[in-house]
Image (cartoon, rainbow, N blue to C red; front, side):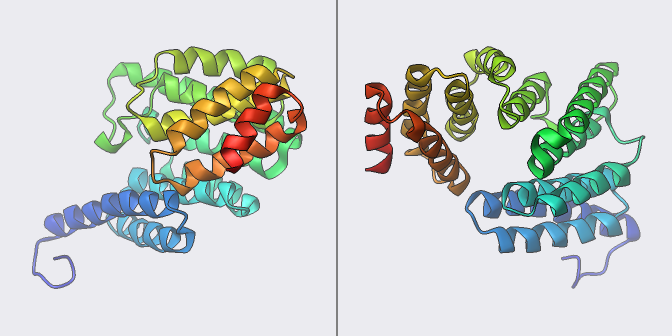
Length: 258
């Protein structure tokens, strides 16, 4: 429609925004399926459309999503650079919810790129994300596609950062608190978040607890078609191998490797 029809500038901008929003969804689906090259192509298409439409918030969301993929797929330096660019490009006038999300992604990119060496920068970004989300209480409008960004999601990211930094005494209470009330019908997300709890328990030298949570991760992951989730199952199993002599862990390892 955008390329082949005649329309006003206003309609053209609306079509470009729709292209960008659809690209966000398409890129996320491809990325979750492990089709990272295709996801990058789709994200970049959407980013181009968002920039043409001069929608800085949408452009930041697309750039941040691609940065998140980079951080999780071995391109940590690219992920950090792009996450920072997404935040800067959106500008200080972006909706608070958007800034909170972009800062969350910056925090994750920092910890994936440098681990403990970037801990201070990651924690600073998380703190600023919380401050940005608090501003959302003022009723400033945010795009509907940011509906899922809330205090619970920020706490989950904080706990994941602590897990990556091998600080289980901070990660475990946060994850348990958020997951206690998490919607069980969101099986993919629940499996992902529980995978970090399993790793945090292992880091805390609590192999029986880690095994119990890992069993839930494996069960949930078996019912969802997500390469991202399958990848986290592999991470959990690898982490538990240190405790292979513990019967509860051995049972989980046998189930996961079977």
